[in-house]
Image (cartoon, rainbow, N blue to C red; front, side, top):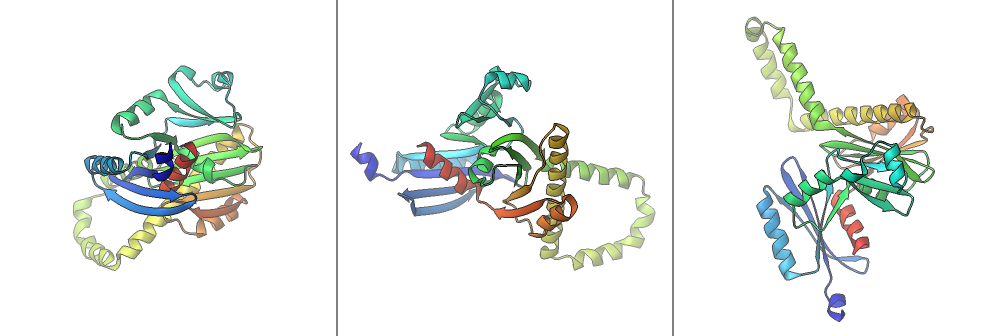
Length: 289
């Protein structure tokens, strides 16, 4: 027991985005960080090696990640009866009760797949837990966590989450590309090619990396805004109370202008906050150890 207090635990959080594993390794002394290291790995073997080496140096190493898929949700109760009322098959999910008031659930299949892929993970959190941990206002408020792959939406009413939704950004992008290909099918590409080649080359030369980044950011902002609109529609269609404020938890570099767009178009006050998912995961793990 005395040795446990001498050795400071390592908290390692990781997530995968665009085929890169992002890692944050932290050590705390009370509430102060005494060690901090970030890593990026292109394959799982290097990630496993890093975690194994850290665990060998310090047996008190706790590894966490979060569930990125759509196989998760929120229920404004911890009652199995409430799950049945919401047509959620309780025997096929695992749920975590929060303060005896609400619960987050994940399908057993999803958990098994993650544990199979990452057997070294001690904690596997739902994406909604990241929002819940960072939320401050919990009455008639919509939160959206934006990543490159998904938008996670959580709505609070009367201090508990009452609605959740997940939108897949990657799928939307693929659909858009397919629509563009279909449009090309209706064009006589051979006849138009010579006339437009010089113009296309000039346009390509005029686009630098900064312009490409701006275009990508605008595209993401457009998608995030639409996700908010779609979630609000579904929430209101199911009898939800009027949303008074929207918080955007940003991990992808959205611009502040998105808050003005939401305010002007939806007449709801919006606020943009940059958050660090990995740091949040480590903070949650510290509370669970």
